Image (cartoon, rainbow, N blue to C red):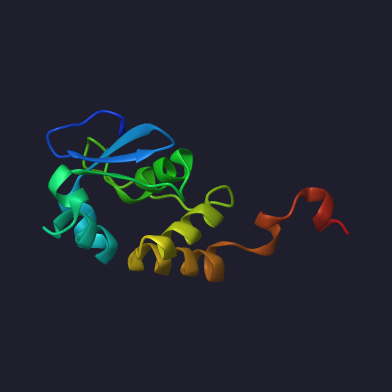
Length: 128
C-alpha cells in the first residue's frame, strides 16, 4: 500500500515543501527517529516550528517520498521497509543527511549481508 503524503492527515500535519510540491509528515514520529526533525519541528525559536512547514532545497521530491515510504508505517500500521539496489543510494544519503541512525544501520546491514555482488551486477557482468 502506497501512502499519500501529498495530503495532510490526522497525524501528518507538518509540511515539507520540496520542488514546489508538498509532503506532509507526522513531526512527532519523525522527531523520535531523528535529531534533525526534533530540532526542526520542535524548537520554538525556529520559524519553521512556528509555521509548521519548511522548504527543503537540497533533496529531491521523489527521493524524500521514497524515504518516507520506507521509514513510515502505512495506513494499516505496517512497516513496508524494503531496501533494494534501486533505493540503496537514496536511503544511504538521506540517512546521513537527515540523521536517521536506525536507517543508517539498516543500509549498512543490507550492504554487508543482504546484497551479494550478483544482485548489483547485470547478468552480462557476472559472466565476465
